[in-house]
Image 1: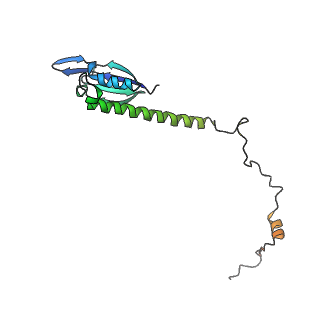
Image 2: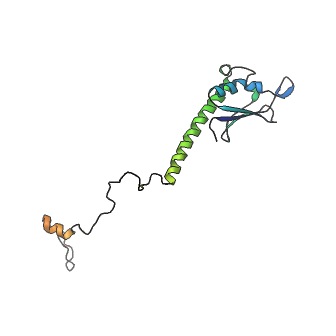
Image 3: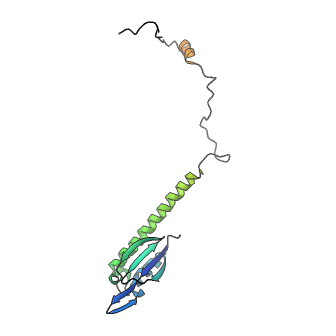
Length: 158
């Protein structure tokens, strides 16, 4: 689903004793979002005085459609400004979430594993312990004094 796709659900507006869908109240909001690169769909619903903005199947902003000003620019309408800010912030959060999930799916599928075509790994993977000297050889070679405990004598206090 695209992050730059916005659905605006709006209901009939109850003003001046008439109950009609008035998409003119969404003019400033729609224009501003389209200028910022969003694709906007206005979808009429049957709920009175209802306006809800949806992105990627999630509700981003909700308000009473009466609070939006009729046929005005976005700069003159504070509710419209808050709605645009909510859409922009949600778009940024969706992009971060997508990048995060993409990265973790790469790790899940082990894309960063060493393969035959990957750069050579210079860390020692297999160490041959048979060619190494034992501890007793080190005692004789390096002249390290080692006291052996006698099994017959109990430990004496020093």
